Image (tube, rainbow, N blue to C red; front, side):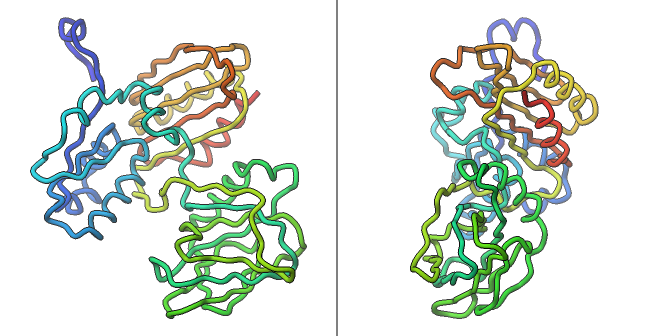
Length: 338
């Protein structure tokens, strides 16, 4: 990332393109740190030799790559044939360009694809039809009414629980809300029913590994079908490399600039060598302008950007790196909120 001064005067670093061998990557990705780091640094991943793997293998590989780097674009190719427009002028170090291409660019990444908040009675029936997978992981958590309009708090709690192995539950079994993650067994053909029990009637957030529509899921109470009061779909991110991951943090809150600078300096001092890429847009409590920053390892560049204007103020950061401690990053950033 360091350039000769004469070259630097005439060129700029626009983005990092990583060429990936779809047929042979599995031979290196688990053991070679360099291969994982090249994936983590990428702004565009060219998944080449796609003709040498099956569609299912290509899908699985792409999910693995997205688990390691949720920010990059992925382009499947044969003989590395890709339009130049897709690998030139990509704006990899331009957050506005990235957000224009992918509005969810800075959103947190979770190991589930959907969540919805329901007003649950004591007992409901969950009905599932045949779907794309032989199982479906599900978690139900109680929600405070004050938090109902925003799923972010429940999603962070669910993240900590969802990473644990869910208890297997055959069709006909009971799901107890607030008792941890379940893995619903769906191998049998036809309709499958489960009973969802709420210890106390009230608001509950349901989190599912896949989209409910993929299984034609319905939730029925004593008075008929239930509809969610609010719901949210998340980018696919439930397959992760255990070493290289991406962590996204997002809050509709301002940040104390002094606390933020102290915290970020400490993170980079302790973990800078393991943080490959970092990007963010932060609402500083003492500034009407967006603070935009990006970094590579311990090198960080940030400056005030355009005014927030009518855009809702929010603070969002994404880290890509090795052995990232999501809980520590989350609690540290939350301590900076104004």
